[in-house]
Length: 460
Image 1 (cartoon, rainbow, N blue to C red):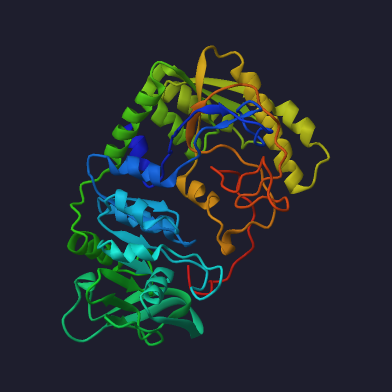
Image 2 (tube, helix red, strand yellow):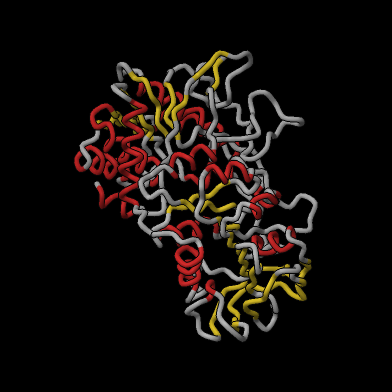
């Protein structure tokens, strides 16, 4: 079991207790909660982090995600150094961050331009927390702008390798160990043109005179390039310097510690109750199922719905893996005829999504009807999808609607549910002015196609 979790390091299933309370109005589309009820609490990003920060390592470095292409990779690089890290909303209040007692903070890249009206911004008060902050690409530009610098479009967008040259004189702790010249990866259209008072330049490239900088008195550091990607060969050294020498992290966090802590929390939530889990065989639901089984054992029953659209031998593979290897109580429900019949003659992709979503809910209810004394429903997703669904960044707005599922939670189970209306979009309601059944903030969903984006105004 431990080897299984280590193999999927960097991914996770986050579970949150959900209750229900009466309210007026229709049920949320696709919800498994009965009409007239809603979850007492939605997924709380800060609360989720507060929980994880209480793990034995007592160290956390949150990453403010501004829509970066590489945001998840930044978190992975930090964790590889033995420090727990998690993506959070870019506009998380400074007071919420302070409650986490973070060892450091990282501002990710992003495709927007900091000088645009709707560009995502962080709470300026985070720069007064006294916590080391590392801004990467957009994060560097935003920090410099907030502290009084000027960010403008570069003469030309830059995407690819560049030669970084350290500034003469004593090497700053952030860049300690780097050779005088090294290769870095650039992906930006804007850059810092004027450093604010109190800043000092640390490195430059032929096209970016301020490729790295820091504040003289505040613990803010910025790099225009991307140290998290393998195309920056010495990038991991920059993270090491930031985490160990600047943030003073001990580097004792392990994925194994996370699994044990999460298991204890699940046992506290579930008690003697019975849990059902929707299992597809993919990473998200498989991690959820394995983690739940480690925590509550035979109290878990997984339901696998065969929709007739699976890969060859996939049903047998899932059955063998989870029933024979993990010894999980797995119920296979063959709904292929219902799915294929409902999809017959349907060509519109969005209509197919709605149809599949509706048929899955009905099939899941039929399969669950024979399982007695069920108290909890578990569903899993990657936490970056949860973060993304709660954000309304210009570059992440979908081009079409999509239906949603409840993601990454344990909640009270009731087999009554309404069918999906399909009017809900990942980041904003498709109906003009919003509607009561489509809250702006989601806890997950089926990914909606997004437009192909260029490198971005300021980078990724």
